[in-house]
Image (cartoon, rainbow, N blue to C red; front, side, top):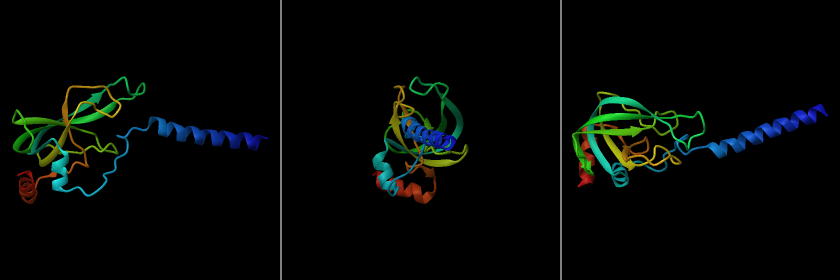
Length: 161
């Protein structure tokens, strides 16, 4: 009898764990880039593409009623000085790009002082089920963003024309 109760508890625990995983899984918790990421495909998918140098970073703490109680979403805001815009329009010579913090959330980890080619899209939510917020630019590891090289800049210019 005791063996049957332990077995049933074990099955219940495993079943509850599986259900919990599927109920509370968010598309931002695991990242998989599907397909080949090329300069041409990155330019087609993005709203704004530019070459710039990152000058600062801050952590953005997202508190949202759509999140389970006690859960806080974190993002990174990276500020760039723009050297060249390949696609889209930017009003200022600096821009802030939001991305995840890494570790499975698809966040692109920028380093202050380095120059990047950034492919970004306009968003109005920090995560899929989140509340509407003022529009911002976001990138991730599947966007094609990368540390800039001369070859990459030439290739982007070629496809951006």
